[in-house]
Length: 262
Length: 340
Image (cartoon, rainbow over all chains, first blue to last red; front, side, top):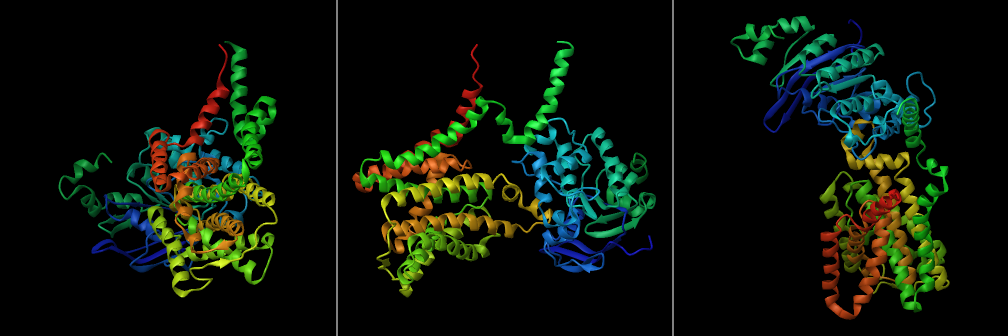
């Protein structure tokens, strides 16, 4: 991990009125790794994603992507550079069928520039490319599912649709905001290899999660946020062993008993 | 049961995908399917083209022309409101800008109507889009309030500064060569824009518009500038409005402050409610119903508004989905009827 970081965040601070949602958070993300971000509710995880993707403006601090300052760029420019995100509360286009949902990102300047899908074929019919992407992400191609209205899809498929929308842009960095939440155990079990495959394809991921067991399995490094401040950063094992993390999650007493289950 | 059935089901399963992807092409498989698609469209086209011929006298023929102009406005409202999520009360703004431009080009440069109308459409749409550009980040009711303000402001500016003929307006604008040309020009423009917008909302660009309505944050996250796409859509919509205004000026042979009258903003909305929101055909249908009714009620004087409101309330309460949505559903059901 001695190479140039793909994303550098320095002293990122975000204040909503008098409340500090993020307080001087600094971290690096290296190419090809999966960085997990955990923390109790309200610790600023989603705000951090919003800040990186410019959906909210930072109060102070800088964020650099591959050496370029992206702190003040508008959200669509950032997505255009290859930083995409999923939303914790899924945001599909409910009035369109699932495969038409992908026509929109495939219509974007970045998708036009980067060309076809996996292997650089000609970006021909966006509907077909959309269905190809959906198949990659786990929609059964010859069933009705890709043609169903997004409003009729269950949560598991919608989470996949969120990821598919990111993949349509051929991103370099994906920020996953709780892709495992709301899924059943079997759905998560099929999602984990998907995440691993994305990493093998050379995509860097930042994953915000509450499902620690699954996250610790896939993540290379984990960062813990608490009340908007960075608590610890390290490998999953180091983080799990850290006393302050346990205190943040479970309070300071009776730590040992509860932690044995995780 | 048995093997044959499985085979059949498997084929059906594979066919479904093909059917969805080939969309309309599927209809070519039988005459029945083809007629199912074409007949309603044909009824509309032929009906609109025949309408001027069956009207008794020049007065009602003129009414048909006005219907078409309102239809353009209603189309523009429906397109913006239901495919982009921008509720635009600026119909009068579009009419006014398009009308004044056409009148000025005609009276000062003495260009013929066949030139001023396209010029006013394009130039007017550019001006309207530029003026609305600062409001594009607004959504829902906020956009509605701001666009409602534009026609009022422009009318007062013209009045106060006494520009463009002031309160007298621009008089002596040329009319179209003859009444038949005027009517069929306007009718064919309505048909052109109707089928044009229907096409537009289904191509990839139109899908982006619908995505902006559904979820603009997700569109931003897909690396697209939503203001840019909103501007394109506003350009299309205001072009329709300006076209209506330009035609209106040549029909009345006069451009004045009344072009900014709120009728042009409100009646299209009523027509959209009656006709069926989001269908694009519905608003045109709504205008065909509403405008003649308002002409018929003219003899009641101010009581007109009462009857008018009653009709509107009736529609909202009993058929809030709109005629077109209701009709479409019945039509589909009719097609599924099987003799037992």
